[in-house]
Image (cartoon, rainbow, N blue to C red; front, side, top):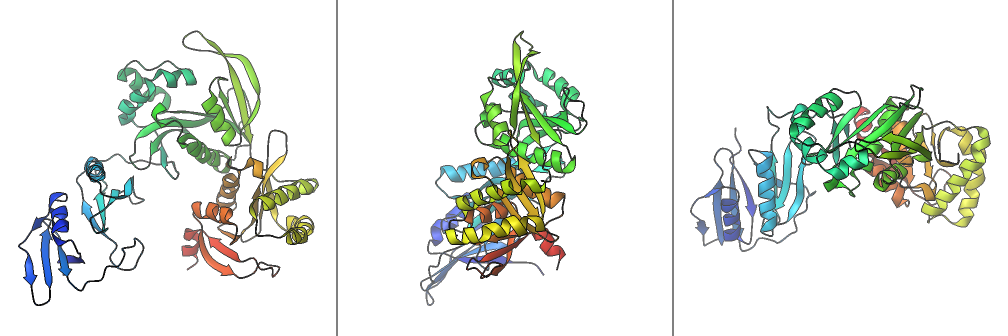
Length: 457
């Protein structure tokens, strides 16, 4: 048994036939006409495989096409290479067609984009994984990045990045003068080195930078590592390095179980300082006249550190309660003042002592984020309003998932910000209660990681 053809209705029969013939290499038969029924159609063939029947009839209803509706959702066309997918997508964009999905690599290794035809039908343009294509051997995957070990065939892109003097002068090394020099440095410094990785774009697999976490030469504690990184100038200001740093911090604290991660940069390198401060690093001072650079300059080092998640003492409960109240007032706008005052003593006197607490402190030793775990789920996770956006919540959640094997969390349905955070972290809604645990009129959503949900079936 073999699929013969797929049929779709259209009001623009001639235009749609020309689209599939012109752009996608189809061959059309002669138009079939049934005047009694007001029916017309073309069969478009594409070599091997099923044909596409385009049909038109006077009584067809015009209903919107939605991506996630039941039934037929897209047509997929195979392209011989990633380059052809990119070329075709840009051609469609230049001719005014809607690009519903920019080129990307799917989780199963297909390189694909999505174009809408004249009627809004979704056309998937796919290039299957190539047998001779280098495997990514990915160490980390973020929303937009694949972070992997360096390879020898990175040399050309590596040279294209590292010949830029703006990059080398911010990092303390001379701009590369030739691809041969880049190959030598790549081989001696990057390839095969433990915990030093290439940063690549997930969609195109393009090398755009490097990140590593290596022993800190200024500290003898083996539980301390130093963070280092560089990013191609064409990709500055897009948040890529912050994204990569967060992935490596989670690896350092959750997998290597480090007690401290450090980082240094030149005082004039404001971009690097912003990356570190955005990720919660604390400036511990300036190491004066720390480095003699390749061109004879002597630079200071701006020194940063980031402590790991730790357990609080009971004496910290009042401070933790203040984080809870500040965060609730900032995000839980649906709560009345009466209800905040109702919950406050319960949190202080009962809830905190009933869970396994973890905290993060800032430069002054002040608690800025905390999390409470039970045997089954993440019971609470709060970040001080002034400290949000520094990755504290993500670090705590990653710790709960990786180190404590937590896969469930409850969240107030009306807390849009928290719900969005958990959904972005991969949780899915599996249930809902009309009221909270105290019977108050605040619906609770039950969330769980999909892999845990599948494992429980």
